[in-house]
Length: 105
Image (cartoon, rainbow, N blue to C red):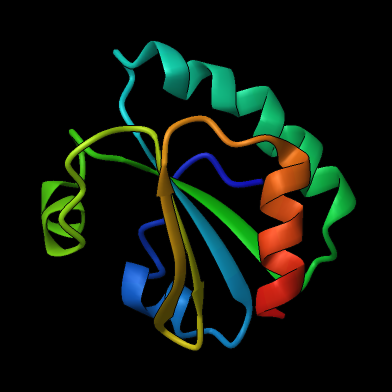
């Protein structure tokens, strides 16, 4: 699992990579967002390497957050081939996320 988008890759390049990408839009000050961290670690241990999990800090990346109309955190989005396949705000369990990822693959 990656903590932030690396500078050498743009957000657009990541979501258009051909892999399923789970994006966690979060904020450092958000209590529920902190609860997602161990859930995402658990998820990353059970999904294959063809699924990429990234975290986007809405305060540090306002352009990306605004372009997807992120109004609350945490908000999870799943992309495949650059298209949004699923979106949900609030805490999600690893099992729920895996089920959605499996359906998108």
